[in-house]
Length: 348
Figure 1: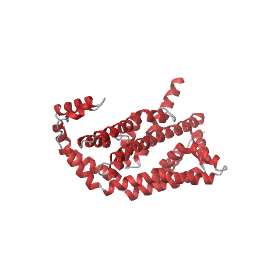
Figure 2 (figure 1 turned 135 degrees about the vertical axis):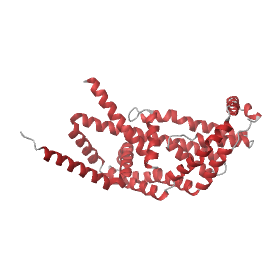
Figure 3 (figure 1 turned 90 degrees about the vertical axis):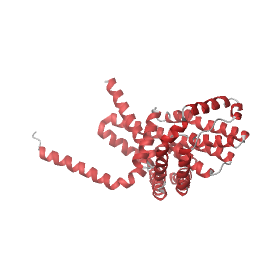
Figure 4 (figure 1 turned 120 degrees about the horizontal axis):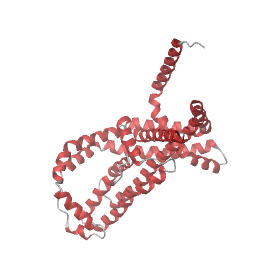
């Protein structure tokens, strides 16, 4: 049979153009759509349990899950971003102070702290010997720039909250029609690659669930423990510190950058008892991700922690705040599908 090459090329170009225009039209909604898909996949077992307790009513279960997303997802982010945006000037002044401060000799009482006093005092002295002041002077030009970039990345409160609300709205639609949407995705994948396509769709869902659990749940638990430490310590600017810590935990940087200065400040004020209590809670918050994140991620698929970190940082740079979730999700799906393809080739 003779093929019409011109017709084939024009057909392909038309299809590519149609796909490109469709993506361009949907571009403002793609971040919310991707994150809504991630949330729905991760919380789908919870929806089914809630539905079972509400007499099998999907509508009531969707209402409960939507309200839960608003309280657990939108409200904390809105409060954190709003606090950072309102206190941007204070954050920039802190960055300038941190870049010009000098590190004094460790007080004598630090060495007397049970268990951790000796290592802390030695680390402090080693930092002085290593020329910490020279290091601070070198990073001084970048401290303000980095802080300003961070404030700018999370400071668009209106746009970010709008994206979050749109995410919740799309999630509600997906909760109502989840089975049909999942079946359509599986049929499409099977149409592309038969049984392998169907398996790829299942693996992608597992990767998305692993990222959502590993990134978001771990960050919320760390933030809750860190907020408890800050509230118990009753330090100045507690709300700002909690907001910054929450964003750092979401970015997978952990709460140490906030909690350790709080502990040092308490000991510097001579409040050894409160400093020790805050130190214990802080160590629990800082170390909890080493236990929680691998366990939660592996409930989906086994993903490298470095992949998650690179996805978070790269997503933040590329897409702003919403990229914290988009980056690791996209990389996790790509990594999972590529690994499955390589393993399948080896079996062949």
